[in-house]
Figure 1 (tube, rainbow, N blue to C red):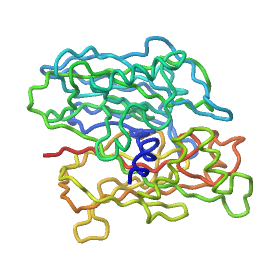
Figure 2: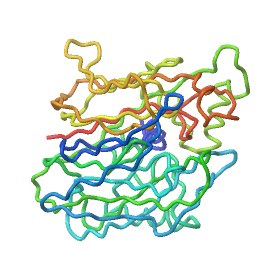
Figure 3: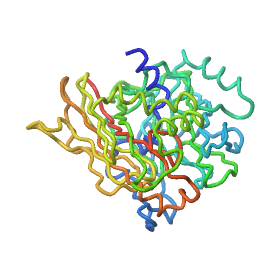
Figure 4: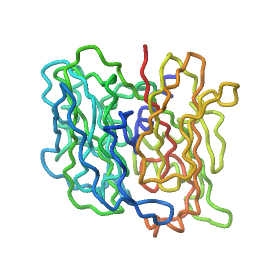
Length: 393
């Protein structure tokens, strides 16, 4: 159990959300919800063609706090032949009293190379450790594949220390009036940025705009539950190459991403039912009573569909996320209305499908060898991640 927690901590906290990301962030009132920009479609993935809508007006008691990287950072692969850079930047929101974050707007400085952004809370008792990580590496920030390197081993699955995330298709996310994410006075924020070097290596100076208010105890706390599943997609019939061997593919991921590259193996301890093939699933029991307020999914470029189901196969089965045609450039969260109550003993099942034939259609795979696809941090690797945003009693 300890081994499983340590291995998962290295990789399962990625993204978008929102992450990778991704991924969006939070349930919001209809009046404040940003409308997605018009898009054009290319090879199954959409690309925004206009600027994001203006921010929603501040509500009573709210103010903005803007966090920005102090100087521009030029991304680079920490190890050859990497095509991705994960960089963490320690930022100070200057909070002197207990505060709640009620909205997030991530502002990627160079959207061409920014694959996703995740904002992590750093409580006062972790600030020194984060400052030490920052001090030990030359230049702005530090390399941080997987998590930030500051959170405790095993942290992140049932209560990720996220404030929010951005991935393509994301915009401002404003919480419903009854929700907030508490942040203690003296806390810091880590901005983790995933740079896709296949799209370029030009400098970036990303920022995030936090909507904050005094914590009067009236809001429920929004928390993030992460549901990762293994990815095990063999090479296509008739396609060969050194990386079509799973062991070689895992070794390649570990070479590029260090300990975070072990997640592909570790996830099988969490999800023993997962099988080799285009579709993988993982079912986890609910260990705390909670209420689902919003959901999101995260995959990369080979993803075709993703779902999250409560109590799959039971009489009270309920699908809370169903994306039958995955669009990498539209990873915002979706409010669950009415909210769904979870009880101890219920289950959450995430299911993802990937399609190797997209290698022949998407520009990002030009020149990339056929490979056995496992969970990996890179843009041309894959993930299967359900994101469930809940409140708890």
